[in-house]
Image (cartoon, rainbow, N blue to C red; front, side, top):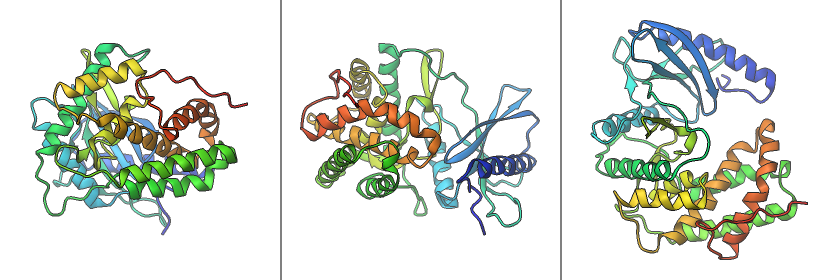
Length: 339
């Protein structure tokens, strides 16, 4: 049987999207929804569609890749259900089908594996446009701290299964990057990546997990996975949620922020949960780790190559500072000359 998410070429990608739309239309029939329209959103680790209705309630339909098992998808929905019980959080949550199932197994074209499908409550809001304000950054930090605090109280059942983000996942990412780095890195630049990766692994192996610094995290709360409504941020897309250090989650968000707003984010976070006094050294480690993992994820897609090349003047600057032991999180680091 062939993977449902097979799209190594542009032609296979188009075939996948045709296949996926048929699956989506078939899946909708298994829910008690009076829907008006279906709109394709994106193809990433899942294929997503917005399902619009004539009521105030809209929905998100997800077709899952083979990356996660049915148990892992169910566990994500269970965590989201717990987070939504908090008065401080409003996150997507799973919707049951007419027969009470939260994860559907939908028939598809002959020769392909049947994909898992879930339906989620849509979180209303808009993605931020333009430059973030101090208030935006502060509130984003508050939001992440509330997620960590609530998830920390979650009592997972014995069959709860989510990925772990740490040394082994980072090594797997580097192994993948080794196959594709020549698309956007020179030999010398790749050597700097390897030096940074060695230092990241060395630091990670010395970190001791505890209830205060480690637990269930979003693991992908970049600005594209937040929407704003009435000036408040709301998290979406928990598809990568799993176990990891809380600072890893923080790093994934501040990676996109200016130094001043990174500091505002930290202040917002610490208004809810205090960080350890020497957190900066570890946060810099996770910052570089998350940045490299991002490139690992995109390196295999030829459509991303131009963007990866453009970003290297910044990436190389951060990596050099990290390898040389210089602080950089709250400093304006000048991009390097890539000529």
